Image: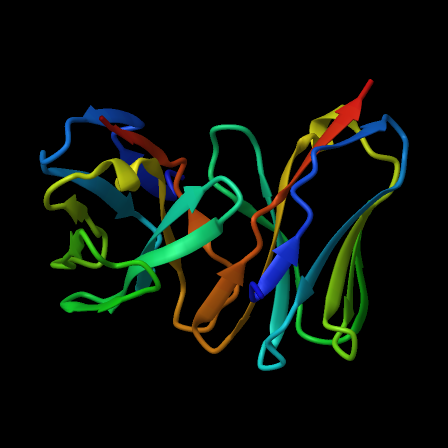
Length: 113
Length: 109
């Protein structure tokens, strides 16, 4: 009963480095998304996907890249890390497009120095 | 003006107290309203959701929506130390969700 699994839990990067945050879900959900959570800002949508091969931008997509080759996996790539990308990142999935119940992973805490 | 406003707290109450958490919003297109609970270093989990104005009750929790005032509330009765968490309001229409910044609640034994 894993749900949404994110790795790694913690990561420290230097400015300019690239990395991939992994997300996998075992609920056969069509919809997957990435959020970042910053103090006082609420959760903000970075990118989302409505199925394998289909992705779209959210509210704050700059500096991030995504792809969806399978239903289960939705990795988030930081192309050239910047201190402004220091945040907690959450992957979330839900069944269908308008189901209100989002299932969240436990998050990745990222620091960019 | 932010689309969703929520007092960040922190809010500290004694065990057994009634807790009231609130959000206001500006977008009249919102059709469904949710409360998520987030424990420290964990992802948010859905606590309650509703589509209509009025009250919805689930155990010790009551969600209240007033669409005319663009105001939603979550009431927690007989609060317990295990209720200590950050509570996020969220609202949406279609596939669009907007989250409030969250209110941090501490219930003291």
